[in-house]
Amino acid sequence: MRVVGPYDKFFKRFIDLTGSLLCLLILLPVIAVVALFVRLMLGPNIFFCQERVGRDGKTFRMIKFRSMMHDRRSDNSGSDNTDYDGSDRRQTHKSLNDPRHTPVGRFIRKWSLDELPQLFNVVKGDMSLVGPRPELVRVAQAHNLVDHPRHLVRPGITGLWQVSCERSSLLHENVHIDTDYVTRVTFVGDCKILLRTVGAVLRARGR
Image (cartoon, rainbow, N blue to C red; front, side, top):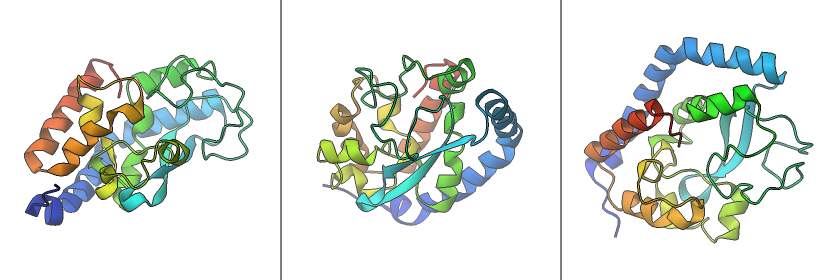
């Protein structure tokens, strides 16, 4: 049973907005440098957008820095029309085995720098700083997760799954972790997840 407290109902969105704007201001030099390197190494279109499942099952376009070479996609929705179709294709989070990755792409993914543009998604209101990981629409549909309780809250840049020691490599096998988070969203819980995320990034573990 989901318990909605004052923080979840009234204050979380305010903290998301102010926190993301502050992060954008502080990290603007880093974002500019990453954008420059992506432009120089991978060419135009430095951003990569994908349709993901958001709050209440509604879809939105999640923004990331490009980290791969183009692969004859007809669009940026994450379709199956690709050169690479490895066994871990869109099953595991942040696979570094995809041959389309470039050195700069591997670096920004290892240090989670490709995730920084998602701060704009938070400002827009599609995402939260902390919440369940937004899933690709076709993956969510394949595993009957579109109407899952994990979508009762906004998806997050980071979340309990990303910092959990119990997570498996397959995204759809971790929904119980997201459910645990959604059951009771608290300020203290979000702060703990953010701190653990910082530690994970500093260890270059990735998310």
